[in-house]
Image 1 (cartoon, rainbow, N blue to C red):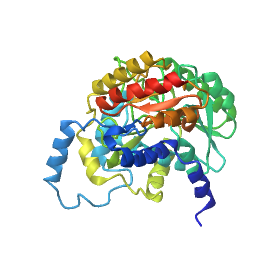
Image 2 (cartoon, rainbow, N blue to C red; image 1 turned 90 degrees about the horizontal axis):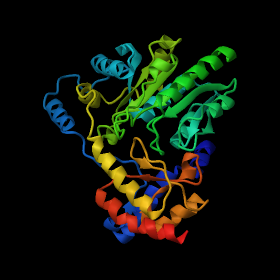
Image 3 (cartoon, rainbow, N blue to C red; image 1 turned 30 degrees about the horizontal axis):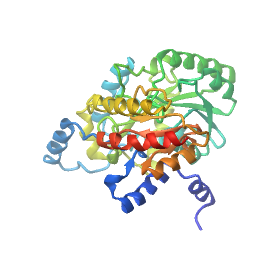
Length: 391
């Protein structure tokens, strides 16, 4: 028998993985070319040429100790390079001491939550949200509480305010958002920062603001993703190079602590310890050296914008309703029927794999990951239309 907690988690397993696994069965039966798989946010654009060149250069010039342990926070030179870049991005002076290299954004979030949560503490996340947040909070004795967003998936500050209790330890936001593609505007972040300052003072405790930002560089139509640090001192960023460099399997990312955080030294020390005792120990050595010289590098996000437009134009012509995403590579349309699970099943009959909104805490919608070949989008549109007409 496995642990009861893990058994319970298995029974609530991610809809994303569930649809991905069912897709594998359909591909085996019908042929991969005949299945339109929009289930998993797996980047399909190759890494930029600069990544491949850096990879080759470093692999050809290995030195003694290049694969040895290093400080749990990562190489100093890598952290300094990251700090220099993030300082410009956030318009705040950040040093290497406020950066910890991690095993992707997931590793960064787990390190943060391990360091700040006591059993029973609450983490508030706006819905729709990335489904793994539930499990990340539970990993460390926390409880994820979700609050609704506005109709366009922007932050509902009043809902967040109403959800804050003496057990609230953090607010966790994700912008550009998975699954909606929404980018939270600067005004909302300013409001949220002001609210958290007021609530922290009233409750006589620090409420942290955590931004999960692996899609920061993937924004469309000239939209700039606002910086977080200027709006709230007790804030942290968790991110990765998985999406902007198209290297999710390499598991490399970092977390950054706002230099104005009240307990900055304790936070950094606690997260460095968490990085070790969670079993990560340190971020992959080779990938740290690779990304050190690639700060600001990214795939061509215009390619994802073109995919978004192809999908949105096609689905709009079929009668689907949705908020056009401003970033990431997901579309989150309304389900034409109230039961989003049954609608996703109907799409599956057309060999189209999507994920029900229920899996993101927002029933009545479904997610389409458009990080796929253009041909997949074009060939799937007739099936989307047939199912829409049946509703």
